Image (tube, rainbow, N blue to C red; front, side, top):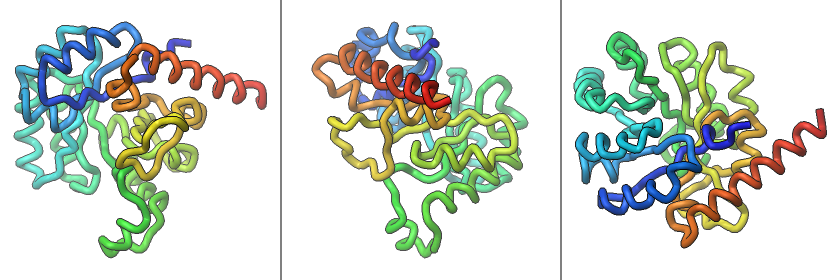
Length: 237
């Protein structure tokens, strides 16, 4: 089993040199790199192009959420660096998803469901009287009915979400933590092994790797957790 392909490291650095030096260390042990707003705002398209030189798949995770024409123009500008994955909020509506489908070419459109920093209390404060899983299911229905290639959801929701997915969708999961890790701003999280066992395709892992004094050692522990979890899964079959 190629475990590397399931691990995308979130490089949340504004300094391009810090980003490059970190990727240089881990480049042979991960399957891709996720670049978010902090990196993109500081370094722009030129910064993304520099990261592309490592030859790893790029998930440009800008989580766009605006009126359709604005999102479309932003996507077209970002598409110049040819990311492998590009994210937008599903709550932006179906019109933007249809517009992106017309221009995306080989870029995979990733639909953001509910941020893993949110929980049921946040939904209540928004006036949404649903549990997170039910809310995410509503958003997955939008992905089912539009040309979305992947969705982002909490690892806690994977099993139930897979029951309502009606087409081929990759499942991308942030909120990946080992028991010893600090949870920071994550409210809905799971171990890497359990997330893959439940059906995640790509694990987004940032600080447990990038803030470790030994990034390669951290990745080794993550992979050991995955192997152990998958062994337990197959023993039960």
